[in-house]
Image (tube, rainbow, N blue to C red; front, top):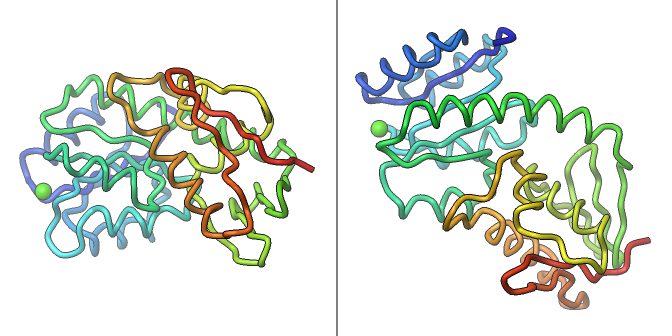
Length: 235
Ligand code: CA
């Protein structure tokens, strides 16, 4: 599996052990951490490609730790959670998690997701580099190199990979409806699942950035049952 290295962050011994066996059987090199401290120590010593992290950890929980990882665009992140109520938090926070699964999960499903994300990371970084790096709309600037947006008043906002890719796709199709399936594929490389809120939460977060500037009208239309449409002025 191209020597990919996976770090499992999970304090429950049995789950961690099972995850290690699962991914080793797939040919990955697997590292284990039981909390944020041991995670940081391994990340500083090993070139990890993907972190699979339980949310309920002793000390700093997975959501806080995930936020700390978000700036590393070469690192994939999958959250594991025992509670549906965590999903909004995963999607709503400025984490940029690539995916999540609720426990109990299907091991095969997890390995498929992991493989998709790993191939997606290399691919999207290469694509992002060949894309026009700076896009501007309505006095906002979107910088593909740093994945930052700059507001008309000069505020710089770092945005996660999913938000960046969604906005860029919408801007490239200004005035046209982009389906939720097309958006999720662009953001994560996977297909839309039933009750999948990933796209909608991402659009909500993007709108929040724009609306924080009261001079700027709403730039993204919701087309019910279809998708979203960007109606800003792209320079
Ligand atoms: Ca746990």
